[in-house]
Each structure stands twice: as structure tokens, then as C-alpha cells.
Length: 403
Ligand code: SF4
Image 1 (tube, rainbow, N blue to C red):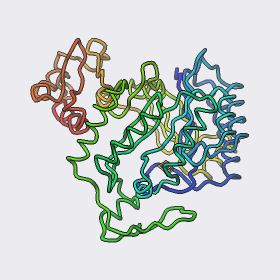
Image 2: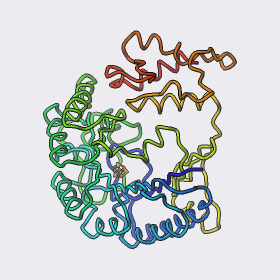
Image 3: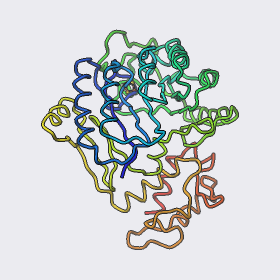
């Protein structure tokens, strides 16, 4: 039974220009109705989980919620779920949406981890991303977090931003180190189709074509913006690995770094293909080999739950082949890789798996090992540093050889 619970809060003040996640404009009365509805879904799913090891409240921008919404939500957790003796309880926060009362309330509710979406310490880069906050807001949020007594916090950064240079990236990661977070995530900016940033880069315009729920602010750029070269992006990634590991952070997943003892348990469960329950509009669940997604339409979600049903937009029973791919894709994201003698029975390491046309994992890997993208050491199959920087390409190549 799942021991991990994810809660989706889909509200944002304004849509960032690169964002293709599901989120809707924040409205306090809608948010309150949404929390009532989340509690209804939690009650319907209370028997799906045994003792919870982790609760992760993500979004969207959960830190926008009024304190009373968090109090209501946590009352519902405690009334309906059993929590393990020391659960990891994370809330995502955006600078500019957190005040002292938010942190004090979260601490009083036993939230013990904050994940802060800072992304950059340069205002011009934040503006290019369409973030709502400035570098000063980010520093104030960290200061507030620390002063309130929440020492366990993670900082998210983005590299590969149009206009970003190696120097500005170095300054952002140095500033992050100065703030001593327990955990750091560094994500490459991916240009998703249908986002204003994508349209802007594709066209000759300097204004985003269709500003998404923007309240205030103008979004013109004085010059045409371009993505950095692929080579520079790879250099930025390598620099983050070298610099952060030299500063004592363990690189434990493609994009994630931690001080000893502060790995994110919740995300490790995803990479280990563990089960989890997702609650909220657009939330994903993985239970008994079935992946399901709730409807993303907030009003439809509220309406269904008012009638006692959970609106699912998709539900997929994984085939063996899907399972093999997921296992490899997720397992190789961890720097320790896949432990060969713990491979599940559907992935024979040495024998050829004939019926599906699937070769053994080790046969399929041999060329990528010879080329220096993968390595097998002490019984672990993992990406090398050369493989990590192009992890998706290596995994696609591995799948081609497997299938
Ligand atoms: S804060 Fe920005 S990136 Fe995050 S979900 Fe909202 S719009 Fe997307």
C-alpha cells in the first residue's frame, strides 16, 4: 500500500512564461472551495494508504494559500491518515508569497521541509522567465524561513535561461551556497511548445504573443531573446556538479544535490517506482501498477467531488514493457543507478528475454558502456559523468537497443 501522499495546489498569481504545468489564476474564494474539495477526496482515499512516510504539497504555488487552508488540510490528514513516526512533510513556496505567519503556521503543523522556487538571483533572468519575484524577494524569503526556525529548505535553480552567462550562473549557485540550503535542485530550462517563451523564441517578436493570466506588469523585451548554445548549457550543468560537490553537496540524482542526510524521500520514492497517492485537480497516482490522473478542470473536479466521485481524466494499466522502461528511466536518474542484483524479475540481467523481442539489460548496455556513457561498478549500473549530461539521449539509445 502507498506510504506517500502528494497534494496538488494548482493556483498561481501569474503564469511564468516558460511554464507548461497545470495551474490556474489564484482566487481566494475558489482556493477555499478547492481545499474543502481536497478534504473530500482525502476522505474517499483514506483506506488506500497505510502509515504515511511523506506528504508533499506542490503546485502551482501552495504558499499562496491562507493559513486557515493549511490548518484545515492538516486537520484532515490527521483525522483520516496515520502518519509514520517521523514523516517528511514538504511544502513548495515561491518568493514573494511567503510571510512570517505562513512559516510559523507551517511549522506548527509539523511541516519540516520547504522547497523554494528561486530559479535565479538575477532580476533580468527572472524577468525573462516571467517570475513574479525579484532576487531581493528570494533573499527575504530565505531569511524569513531561517528566522522562523525552518532550517531544512531546498532551493530550485534554472540554467539555460536566455541571456544567462556562465558568470551569472556561477553567481546564482554561489549565492545559493551562501544561504546554506540543505538541498539544491538545478533544472535545465526546457522550451515547451505552446508556452509564451517558446513562441517568443520562434518568432521575431520581442513581446510574448498571448500573455497568460498576467495581473500587472508588461512583458516586452527590448531585444530579441535567444536560447543559449547547447555547449554552454552542458558547461553550466557540469559546473554545477563540480562546484556543488566541491562545496559538500552530494549529487544524488540527475538534477538534485543534498547535504548528507537531507535527500528528498518523496522524490526518491518516485525514482524507485514506489506507489503514491495523488490528491487534487491534475494530481497523478500510482497504485497497484495503475497510473491515474485526476481531471485538470478545477470546477469539474469540485463538482464531481460534491457528488462523491473522483474525476479521473486518464487511467493506465502498465504493460510489462512500460514497466521495464519506467524502471530503467527512473533508476538511471539516481547517480547510484540501478542495483543489478535487485532487478525485478521482469528484467533479467543476463538472459535474453525473447517474447517481447527484448534483450537482457546488460547486453543492451554494452556499447554504451564501451563508449563511456554508462558504467557497471560494484554491481550498480549507472550513468557516468559523460552520460549524465546527456542522460535523456543515453536512455533513449538504451531503449532502442533493448526493444
Ligand atoms: S510558479 Fe510559475 S512555474 Fe511554477 S507552476 Fe506557477 S506558473 Fe508554473
